[in-house]
Amino acid sequence: MTFSAVQSEIRPVQWNGHACVLIDQTVLPGIYRTIEIRTSDQMATAIRTMIVRGAPAIGVAAAFGMVLGWQEAPQDDPITHLERVAATLRATRPTAVNLFWAIDRMLTVARREPSFARLEREATAILEGDIATCRAIGEHGLLALPAAPERLRLLTHCNAGALATAGYGTALGVVRSAHREGRLERVYADETRPRLQGARLTAWELVHERIPVTVLADTMAAHVIGRGLVDAVVVGADRIAANGDTANKIGTCGVAIIAKHYGVPFFVAAPWSTVDGNLPSGDQIPIEQRDSEEMRAIEGVALCPQDVEFYNPAFDVTPAPLITGIIVESGVYAPGELAAAGQAQLGR
Ligand code: MRU
Image 1 (cartoon, rainbow, N blue to C red):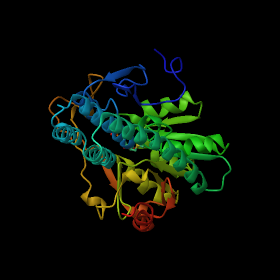
Image 2: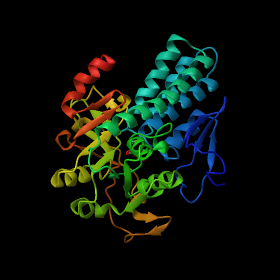
Image 3: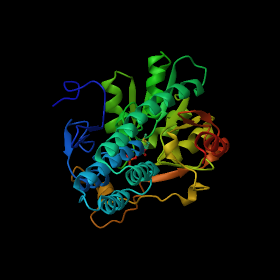
Image 4: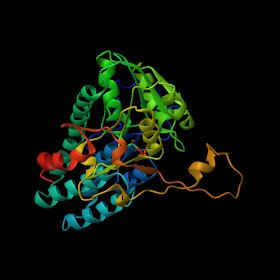
């Protein structure tokens, strides 16, 4: 099955009234297939194995995981069951705070208005809200990008696109808006070892929309930025601390250091649901450690000698002083302005 034969807009998480339909992101770009998720345990597995991935997308998926949990719950005590489902979903991936934000929001609603229809409505609101949020991020980001040159060369890391959200994307939302306005020359997409979200997913999305994209090995960023081929860097985020320190896919911090060295602006694009106002700084952000198999082999072909040891943190933290601006749905803030802006916006 090819993607374009099926639908034109990328929607990684969809609800069909009784089950959730996920695009299987583990097999793209070679295979486009969807998987029907019918139980909350299946949803937890899909998040853990990265069939669905990207901070906002796993939040949306977890929200529907809670709807599935309600469907499974005994009638006499559904809330106790839902709390168990919440614990299972929370244990899937530790870094992206959107997961916890969405689960908490669903639990709050369930305790107040315990009904399937209400939970279904809330999960749908989270999904639709995320698409609107990404579009707003795209518009604000467009205004924050350098005014010159007229047509920009943007570099991104990992995949913060439609696949990583409910649709449209955060960093790629900015890219999409720039492309629509005729302000984009090209995107450089870091391949993003070890799981290659840049090469596999970002490139797939952009090729699908005929947005010019060049894939780089991660080792090439300093050379390409140093040669003056990049006007700005735009990345997504998994969790942003109150001081603006930002956890994102491993390798992001290195790109930020390179951008700072060469005087290239470095933007983080994310919804407010990615901002964790409870954490004063990034050193408290939990960093997921993943299986060493992700590094040892690609598609079963060994890259290293048999008994070598690996270190496989999935995320790193970019210190706030390396970040030019944080693009959220309400505007663009310097990292130091974020906490006050969050309080004004969300009462945090
Ligand atoms: O491990 P992943 O693929 O879930 O990591 C994804 C990222 O790091 C994204 O950049 C981040 O979640 C932002 S998605 C809009």
